[in-house]
Image (cartoon, rainbow, N blue to C red; front, side):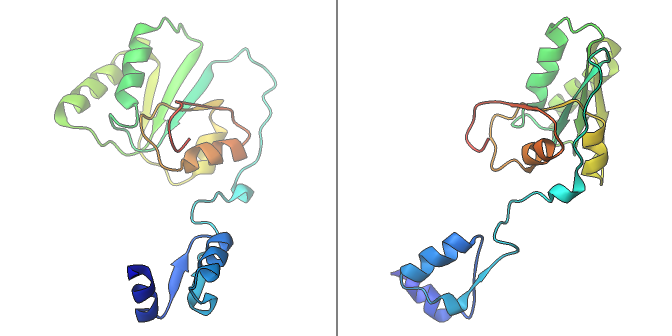
Length: 171
Protein backbone atom coordinates (compact mmCIF):
# COMPACT_ATOMS: atom_id res chain seq x y z
CA UNK A 1 0.00 0.00 0.00
CA UNK A 2 1.00 3.62 -0.45
CA UNK A 3 1.14 4.07 3.34
CA UNK A 4 3.80 1.37 3.71
CA UNK A 5 5.85 2.70 0.78
CA UNK A 6 5.76 6.16 2.37
CA UNK A 7 6.75 4.65 5.73
CA UNK A 8 9.83 2.95 4.29
CA UNK A 9 10.93 6.15 2.54
CA UNK A 10 10.77 8.32 5.69
CA UNK A 11 13.06 8.72 8.66
CA UNK A 12 10.38 9.86 11.09
CA UNK A 13 6.59 9.73 11.42
CA UNK A 14 4.82 12.30 13.57
CA UNK A 15 1.54 11.36 15.20
CA UNK A 16 -0.76 13.16 17.62
CA UNK A 17 -1.34 10.57 20.35
CA UNK A 18 0.17 7.59 22.11
CA UNK A 19 -2.81 5.46 21.07
CA UNK A 20 -2.18 6.38 17.43
CA UNK A 21 1.46 5.30 17.81
CA UNK A 22 0.35 1.95 19.26
CA UNK A 23 -2.19 1.50 16.45
CA UNK A 24 0.46 2.16 13.81
CA UNK A 25 2.84 -0.25 15.56
CA UNK A 26 0.22 -3.01 15.58
CA UNK A 27 -0.36 -2.46 11.85
CA UNK A 28 3.18 -2.97 10.66
CA UNK A 29 4.73 0.44 11.18
CA UNK A 30 7.83 0.23 13.39
CA UNK A 31 7.41 2.31 16.51
CA UNK A 32 11.11 3.23 16.41
CA UNK A 33 10.36 5.72 13.60
CA UNK A 34 7.26 7.19 15.27
CA UNK A 35 7.38 10.33 17.42
CA UNK A 36 4.37 11.54 19.40
CA UNK A 37 3.90 15.32 19.28
CA UNK A 38 3.90 17.19 22.57
CA UNK A 39 2.34 15.27 25.42
CA UNK A 40 0.24 13.21 23.04
CA UNK A 41 -2.27 15.75 21.87
CA UNK A 42 -2.16 18.48 19.24
CA UNK A 43 -5.42 19.93 20.52
CA UNK A 44 -5.04 20.60 24.19
CA UNK A 45 -5.59 23.30 26.74
CA UNK A 46 -3.03 24.32 29.34
CA UNK A 47 -5.41 24.51 32.27
CA UNK A 48 -2.66 26.02 34.45
CA UNK A 49 -3.39 29.32 32.67
CA UNK A 50 -6.92 29.49 33.99
CA UNK A 51 -8.45 29.93 37.41
CA UNK A 52 -12.09 29.18 38.06
CA UNK A 53 -13.96 32.26 39.21
CA UNK A 54 -17.12 32.04 41.26
CA UNK A 55 -19.71 34.73 40.71
CA UNK A 56 -21.27 36.03 43.91
CA UNK A 57 -24.26 37.75 42.36
CA UNK A 58 -26.48 37.49 39.33
CA UNK A 59 -27.57 41.11 39.64
CA UNK A 60 -25.02 42.43 37.14
CA UNK A 61 -25.08 42.55 33.35
CA UNK A 62 -24.27 39.13 31.90
CA UNK A 63 -21.21 39.34 29.67
CA UNK A 64 -21.43 36.82 26.81
CA UNK A 65 -18.22 36.21 24.87
CA UNK A 66 -17.76 35.03 21.29
CA UNK A 67 -14.09 34.25 20.72
CA UNK A 68 -12.38 33.43 17.44
CA UNK A 69 -12.51 34.43 13.80
CA UNK A 70 -15.39 36.83 13.15
CA UNK A 71 -17.03 35.63 9.93
CA UNK A 72 -20.29 34.36 8.46
CA UNK A 73 -19.41 30.62 8.86
CA UNK A 74 -18.61 31.14 12.52
CA UNK A 75 -22.06 32.62 13.14
CA UNK A 76 -21.10 36.24 13.70
CA UNK A 77 -23.74 37.67 11.37
CA UNK A 78 -26.40 35.32 12.73
CA UNK A 79 -25.58 36.66 16.20
CA UNK A 80 -25.91 40.25 15.01
CA UNK A 81 -29.36 39.52 13.59
CA UNK A 82 -30.38 37.67 16.74
CA UNK A 83 -29.33 40.50 19.03
CA UNK A 84 -31.02 43.07 16.78
CA UNK A 85 -34.38 41.27 17.02
CA UNK A 86 -34.30 40.35 20.71
CA UNK A 87 -35.41 42.75 23.43
CA UNK A 88 -32.40 42.15 25.68
CA UNK A 89 -32.74 45.34 27.73
CA UNK A 90 -29.57 45.98 29.67
CA UNK A 91 -29.19 42.45 31.07
CA UNK A 92 -26.75 41.18 28.40
CA UNK A 93 -23.62 42.43 26.70
CA UNK A 94 -22.11 40.49 23.79
CA UNK A 95 -18.34 40.77 23.44
CA UNK A 96 -16.73 39.56 20.21
CA UNK A 97 -12.98 38.85 20.31
CA UNK A 98 -11.01 37.95 17.20
CA UNK A 99 -9.90 38.82 13.72
CA UNK A 100 -12.46 40.14 11.25
CA UNK A 101 -12.85 37.91 8.19
CA UNK A 102 -15.80 39.53 6.42
CA UNK A 103 -16.49 40.55 2.83
CA UNK A 104 -17.30 44.23 2.16
CA UNK A 105 -21.08 43.80 2.49
CA UNK A 106 -20.82 41.82 5.72
CA UNK A 107 -18.25 44.26 7.13
CA UNK A 108 -20.66 47.14 6.42
CA UNK A 109 -23.47 45.28 8.27
CA UNK A 110 -21.14 44.46 11.15
CA UNK A 111 -19.94 48.04 11.55
CA UNK A 112 -23.50 49.37 11.30
CA UNK A 113 -24.58 47.01 14.08
CA UNK A 114 -21.67 48.09 16.28
CA UNK A 115 -22.75 51.71 15.86
CA UNK A 116 -26.22 50.83 17.16
CA UNK A 117 -25.68 51.26 20.90
CA UNK A 118 -29.01 49.60 21.71
CA UNK A 119 -27.68 46.23 20.50
CA UNK A 120 -25.25 45.63 23.35
CA UNK A 121 -22.48 44.30 21.10
CA UNK A 122 -18.85 45.24 21.62
CA UNK A 123 -16.00 44.25 19.31
CA UNK A 124 -12.48 43.72 20.60
CA UNK A 125 -9.63 42.97 18.19
CA UNK A 126 -7.58 39.83 18.75
CA UNK A 127 -5.91 39.87 22.15
CA UNK A 128 -2.85 37.98 23.33
CA UNK A 129 -4.10 36.86 26.73
CA UNK A 130 -6.92 34.34 26.70
CA UNK A 131 -6.81 34.36 30.48
CA UNK A 132 -7.64 38.08 30.51
CA UNK A 133 -10.52 37.55 28.08
CA UNK A 134 -12.11 34.69 30.01
CA UNK A 135 -11.79 36.54 33.32
CA UNK A 136 -14.08 39.29 31.97
CA UNK A 137 -16.86 36.97 30.81
CA UNK A 138 -19.77 35.16 32.43
CA UNK A 139 -20.51 32.76 29.57
CA UNK A 140 -18.97 31.77 26.22
CA UNK A 141 -21.15 31.40 23.13
CA UNK A 142 -20.11 29.51 20.00
CA UNK A 143 -22.67 30.32 17.28
CA UNK A 144 -20.56 28.62 14.58
CA UNK A 145 -22.19 26.70 11.73
CA UNK A 146 -19.04 24.56 11.32
CA UNK A 147 -16.23 23.72 13.69
CA UNK A 148 -13.22 21.48 14.02
CA UNK A 149 -12.15 20.92 17.60
CA UNK A 150 -12.91 24.12 19.50
CA UNK A 151 -10.07 25.05 21.83
CA UNK A 152 -12.13 28.09 22.83
CA UNK A 153 -14.84 25.92 24.39
CA UNK A 154 -12.26 23.78 26.22
CA UNK A 155 -10.46 26.89 27.50
CA UNK A 156 -13.73 28.43 28.66
CA UNK A 157 -14.63 25.27 30.55
CA UNK A 158 -11.12 25.15 32.06
CA UNK A 159 -11.83 28.70 33.28
CA UNK A 160 -15.04 27.53 34.92
CA UNK A 161 -17.28 29.30 32.42
CA UNK A 162 -20.43 27.73 31.03
CA UNK A 163 -20.55 27.40 27.26
CA UNK A 164 -23.41 27.42 24.78
CA UNK A 165 -22.85 26.07 21.27
CA UNK A 166 -24.75 24.84 18.26
CA UNK A 167 -25.24 21.12 17.94
CA UNK A 168 -22.69 20.60 15.17
CA UNK A 169 -19.84 18.23 14.40
CA UNK A 170 -16.68 19.19 16.30
CA UNK A 171 -18.44 20.56 19.35
